[in-house]
Picture 1 (tube, rainbow, N blue to C red):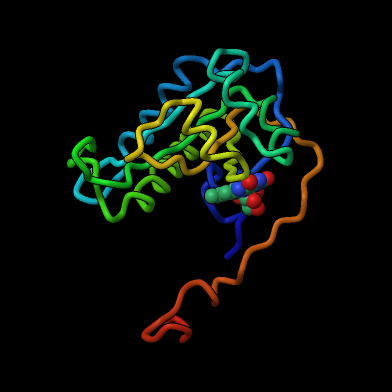
Picture 2 (cartoon, rainbow, N blue to C red):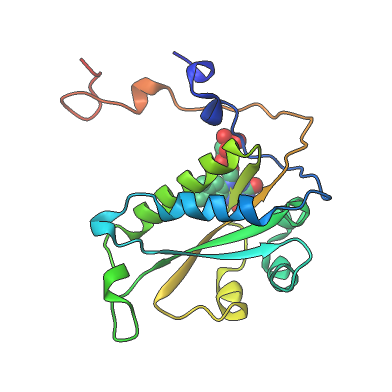
Length: 185
Ligand SMILES: Cc1cc2nc3c(=O)[nH]c(=O)nc-3n(C[C@H](O)[C@H](O)[C@H](O)COP(=O)(O)O)c2cc1C
């Protein structure tokens, strides 16, 4: 069993660092990725996620690019869109009680995974990133205090020619049997 045995949507996914700076993300493609996230499972159907979407060149993009760390600012602004992910963290008076969940980070991650698979199906590449000024983004986008900005995702047409070596921990260190650390029977 190896990566080549996976469904092509997962097999061919990787975090590219070069995007076609002329590619425009269509409304339909964006709507389709958001739809994939919307229909992800979540604890108690709490759906504790939200997204900030900036398309290259629009007002949101101009506002968000300055919060990127230099390491990400080298490649992410060329992507067709920057999507920032948020999850609700509190159930205080201003918060939406229906969106509160102890599993909010798990659920957000899963929604993003679904968004990413849908992007792959559309022939697009996603590169998630944490290297940005989270507080500054929350300020710029006026994110309410019961929401936490979590990650960013560059979405676009990947044009990377150089493929960096990729490694993973062995399956034997990921899936265990009766006891943690014991092989699957
Ligand atoms: C939560 C999260 C944060 C990440 N942060 C960064 C980042 O700040 N900069 C970066 O270049 N890549 C970032 N990545 C991408 C990972 O480095 C990448 O997924 C990992 O090296 C595996 O490579 P692959 O996605 O091509 O398989 C992040 C990925 C995740 C899921």
